[in-house]
Image (cartoon, rainbow, N blue to C red; front, side, top):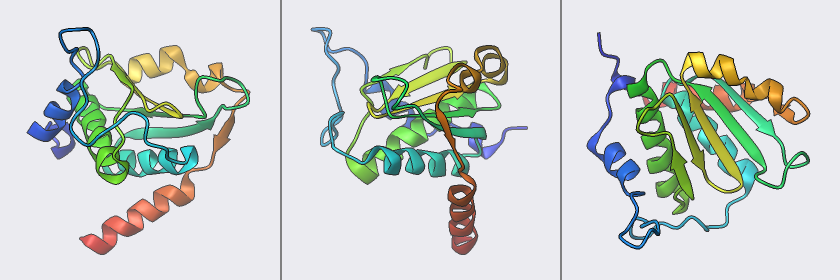
Length: 166
């Protein structure tokens, strides 16, 4: 049985495919989107958590790691139930972040196999895993010196918004 979250829309597929290399090796970005739009990193991370919740990603975690690395401020980590859902989650995040902030990822890695997709928004990096690789890499343990942010209220807000619109 196919779950509605396992269906990838044409928009999600097109969004993911926009990052194919142009002939000169540089990335081409959709019109009106940029990887350099300034957005508060906490706001962006929380927005991604809301999108993940709406797309029924599981085991969502938000780690603040800005004191452990200069690479990024936050990791958002989640699990998808199938490779199709993992691709759908990535496409939905990319689409909604683009709509909300005019922001597109600096890079998207792992889309073809969809076992672990990494989406780099600069100050926030999203990791979308299948269960097997999530357990194997255990990023929460690897980055345990970071601060895990309680997302309970963010998730409640998302659920509240969904209930009001249904």
